[in-house]
Picture 1 (cartoon, rainbow, N blue to C red):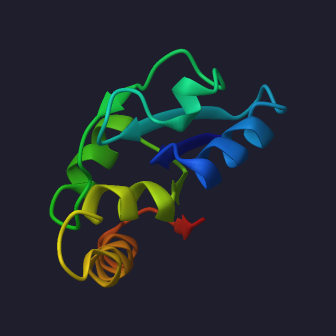
Picture 2: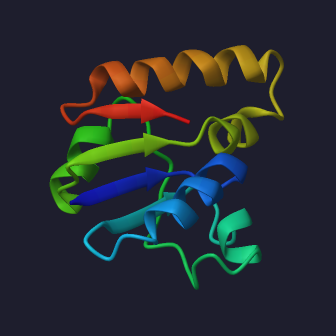
Length: 109
């Protein structure tokens, strides 16, 4: 099974550590920054894709990555939009739009 983890903040790092227990699961990690929490805490050595995922590009990126399942770390997306006014509300709506637009099953962490 191939899992695409979008965002490697607290929830993404915890999920990553659990998924690493099964060698049959391949995890591809993307984040908007090159050194998110999962890298800082040495859960992984590096991010596979440094990308900002949006409802417009999720399926294009998914065609490259070819995941069976997408996990979306809410904390990482909120981090990306925290600097703007009403950032958390905007991040929540973006997450829902990403999941709705995705052609691959998508679970928000």
